[in-house]
Amino acid sequence: MANVAVEPTGETVYLTPDETVLGGLYKAGFAYTVGCRRGGCGICKVDLVSGEVSHERTVADTVLTDAERATGTCLSCRAVPVGDITIALRGEELRLINPLLHSINERARQRAEALLHATSLHSTSTHKE
Amino acid sequence: MGIMRMGYAHVRVTDLAEAKQHYANTLGLYETLSTDGKVYYKGWDEWDHHSVVLEEGGVGVVKYGFKVEYESDIDLVEKRAQEFGLTVERMSAGENPEVSDGIRFTAPSEHVFEVYHSQTLIGTEVGTHNPEAFPRHLVGVGVPALDHSLILAEDVRTMENMFKHVFDFFPTERVQTDLNDDDAHYIASWLTSNNQIHQIAVLEGPQGKLHHFAFKLQDWTEIGRAADLFAMDDVPIDIGPTRHGITRGQTIYFFDPSGNRNEVFAGGYPAYRDRPINKWTPDQIAKGIFYHARELNERFTTVST
Image 1 (cartoon, each protein chain N blue to C red):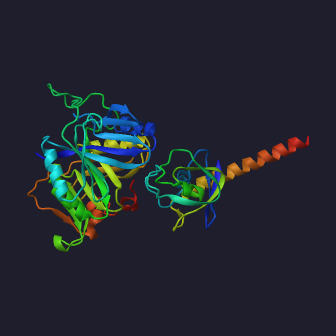
Image 2 (image 1 turned 180 degrees about the vertical axis):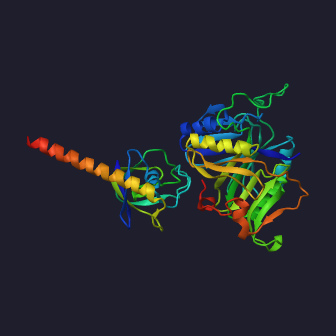
Image 3 (image 1 turned 60 degrees about the horizontal axis):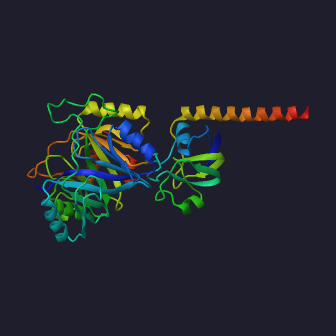
C-alpha cells in the first residue's frame, strides 16, 4: 500500500499493494490523458517528484529510455510505487470524474492510516511494558 | 495476378509469454512455430503457414509480408518498386521460416514490406474435403484470419502513390482537405487490390509507426461476443463495439499486452476498381472513424507503437 500525491493540488490517493499509479488513480475516480494502458505508447508518462517507483514489467527502451528513467520519468500504467510518492502530470491537471469512487478511496485511505496509527501506538505501549 | 493480400504482420512485443496468452487464448490464433525468440500464428481459416509473427523485444511493427499470385509477379513488383525509386533487395527462401523467396523494400514511411509468392501450405482447420462450417473447439474469439493494417506516415499522398504504382492498389476511401484531388492535402487513404475494402490504410502521423493491425470477423454478433471475451480477459478496449463510417465496417479497437493496437473488423462493402472513391472532409473525420460517437477519442491520433 502507498499514497500517491499529485501536484500541484496535493490530491492524495490510496493504492493497494502492486497497484499501478494509473490503475490506482482511475480506480479512485480520477482521469488524465492515457493511451494503451499496457506500456506501449508512452502517453501516460508523469514526473516523479519524490519517492520511488518500480516498473515491474518489461517496458520497451523506445517507450521509456534509460535517460528518462534516471531523471524521474514514470510510465504511470506500469509504475508501482515503492512507499509513498509524489507525482506531477505533464501539461494538464488531474480531473475528478467520479466523486463516488473518490469517496470510497478516501475512506480506504483513512482506514489504512488509522490502522497504521493504532499499530504504532500498540507497539509503543508494548515496548514500555 | 499481382498482390492478393497482406499475408503476414510481424510485430514486436515486450513479453512473449503475455503476448502468447493474448494472441492464442484470447484471440484464438493457432501457433504453428516457435523458434529464435519468435512465435508464428495462423487463424483457423487461413491455409498458409502463418499470418502473425511475434518477436520479443520492444513494441511496434517489424515488417509486413504481401503475397502475390504467381512467382513471376515478384519480378513485376520489383520493377515497379525500382521505377518508383525504392531500393529493393532480394530475399531468399527461408529467411522467414516457411516463406518463399521474394523482395524487400523500405517505404518512404520507413515501414518494411516484403513480397513473396508462397508459404508452406498447412491448410485451414476445417480442411477442404467436405469441410464443416467452422472448427468445433475454437479458443476465445476464434478469429479466422488477419485482415488489414493501418500505418502512420508523414506523407500520405506519396504512400498512396507508392501502393498504387508498386502494388497496383487502388484507394477506396480517403480523408482529404479538398474534394478536388489536385488541390487536396491527403490526411488518410484506404487501399486494396481486390474486393476486400482495405488491405492497408495510411494515416498522417509519425514515420514508421503502427496504428493497428486487424483480424476478420463476420458480423455484429461476433463483434459483440469478442467484446464480452475482452471483458473476461481484462483486455483494454480503446473503442467499440462501434461502426466506422469509412468502409462501413463494424469494429472494436483494443490493445495487446504490449500496447500494440489490435482490431476485430467485420463487414465493409465490396471494393471495385471502377467504384468512385468515397471522400471524407476533415470536419467529418470523427464520423468517418467512429460513426456512432461522431467524436474522435484522444487516443486515436496520439497512440501508436
